[in-house]
View (cartoon, rainbow, N blue to C red):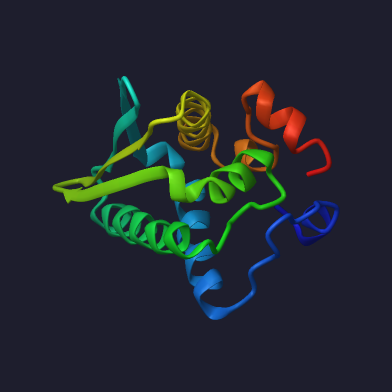
Length: 159
């Protein structure tokens, strides 16, 4: 997304510009560039999802693994990304009620995102759909707000 496009967004949790944010951003930009070399498979769980994101490209495997580790750290510390996007804003707002467990696998990462609250399970599924769109369409998908459950639309209308 160009700077001029980004500047029109309302950032609910601030806009990162420190060195760690720039490193994280470089990783997910590379994943968007090389999205056609990624594979994402999701298994629905009663309380969330189990997903594998993989690649046959060893450099992308490294980037996937670094990206997931970085997002786990950001999620745990509340350092939001895409806070202009109501989906990501809600994920970070409810992060203490969402469990994220992951492990590196041979060609990428396997992660589980779970919650007890049915609304948050719905949010996890919307996040999964968004990441599938990123893998399928790359930057084209990243330029737009993510699909969200109705309760998120109502709560984050101004985002």
